[in-house]
Amino acid sequence: MRAARDLGISTSVLYRWRLQAQQAGQAAFPGQGRTTQTPQEQEIQRLRRENEILRQEREILKKAAAFFAREIFEVRVYRCPPR
Image 1 (tube, one colour):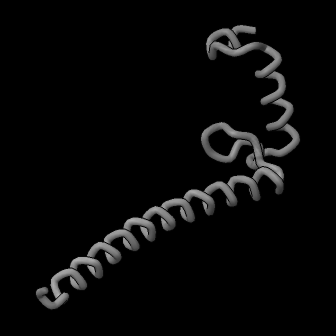
Image 2 (cartoon, rainbow, N blue to C red):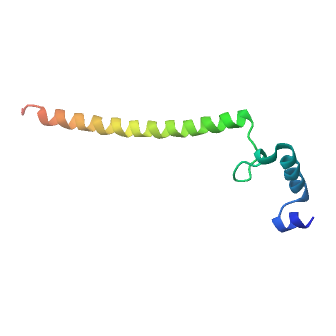
Image 3 (cartoon, one colour):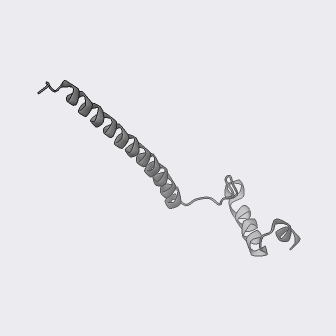
C-alpha cells in the first residue's frame, strides 16, 4: 500500500491504526500518536512520575542534612573554650 510505504511503516501497522480509529474514534490516538492506555498503564505512569519526584525530594533532603550537619559542627568547634 502506497500510504504505508510513504510513511515508512508496514501495511499491518497501517491496518491496525485504521481499525483502532474505527473502533475508538477520536480517543484512539490521544497525543503523540499513542494508543489509549489501560488503567494499569495509567497507574504505572503515575507511579513512575511520583517515584521520580520522591527521588528528587530525597536528594534535596540528603544535601540539606549534610549542609546543616556541617554548619552545626562548625558552630560547636568555634564555641569550644580554648585549652
